[in-house]
Length: 74
Image (cartoon, rainbow, N blue to C red; front, side, top):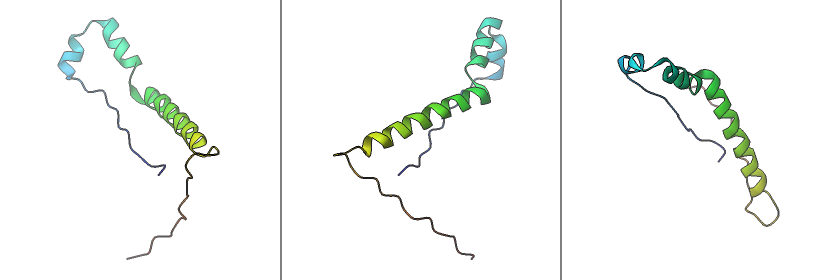
């Protein structure tokens, strides 16, 4: 199925982060945050699309798409 979750986080104690030299803080900030997350998501999406193409090539396994189903009101 073309559904999955790949959470990635950068976690650091705020006091420890504040104690780092400026060059280290800048490096961490450059490699994290929303912009980096969107870049990583685009890479994952591209890899996923490439994998689907390979799987659908002649002689490879077949992918079946499930029909969408409307949810019922409870």
